Image (tube, rainbow, N blue to C red; front, side, top):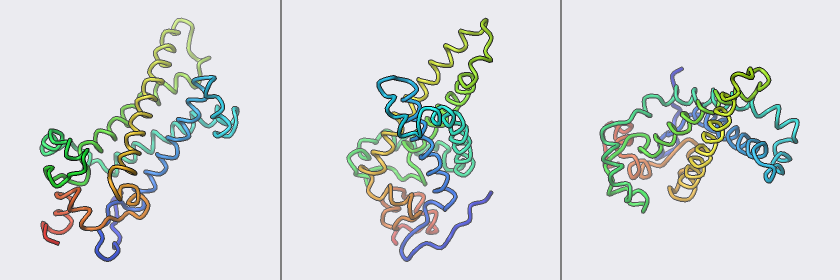
Length: 218
């Protein structure tokens, strides 16, 4: 499905279309629910989280179903962004100067396209962990179906599921911190879908140049 670009507000550029933002929030909402319910199922000390997830029975019923929804939404996200998610030669140069990004001196960084390498790595981390979560989760969804001779497979599934979940939680915490606190305007663009031209030029010069026909003096 081709993304249709709407007309942005005066002086702005469209960064995310509605279906991109909707997919992002579907992934985010499911991810938060899965983390809360998963931690409640994982540890008795965190079982109080089950009350936030609709109660024990509801949580146990929804966790695997929403896990599938989460994974499918991640795949749809890849389909929407597959061209922008490719690692490019200039990404390695950017990574070598990542300290300038951390200290919010993007003007000292090489020009990048729609996403920086950190954003790409975050997505590939979540997708890779998603694969591990969904396949191990399918085995844990119906544990009674696993023959006794395959019980070692259940152990592998438990370790894989927990490891991928912790990796996803770590990635999400970094993503939220970067989007809300480090990069000004990062959160708002997922609400409105738009960014100002100065913001685009400052953070993503190659993407800005492509949208403005190669101009860098707007």
